[in-house]
Amino acid sequence: MEKLQTSTGKLISKIYEYQKFIKLNLQFINALEEEGADTSLLREEINELEGKIAELRLRSGLAF
Image (cartoon, rainbow, N blue to C red):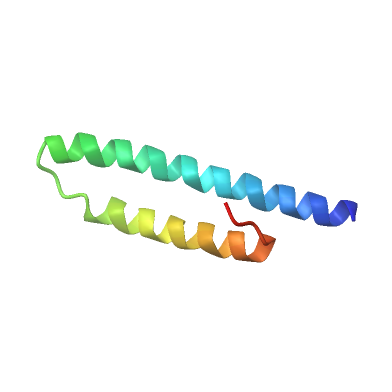
């Protein structure tokens, strides 16, 4: 049981880490768009991170 809690804790920690990267990328996107720069690569990275988050949620059984 303890191993399961540790694994779930690691998955949750990874989800929060990815969410922080998404938030940071969104800040970069806003700043870059004000300058008229291309943000397509950052948006692709956000999509990849969101996919990873969805996969981690499925593996952990979390629905938040």
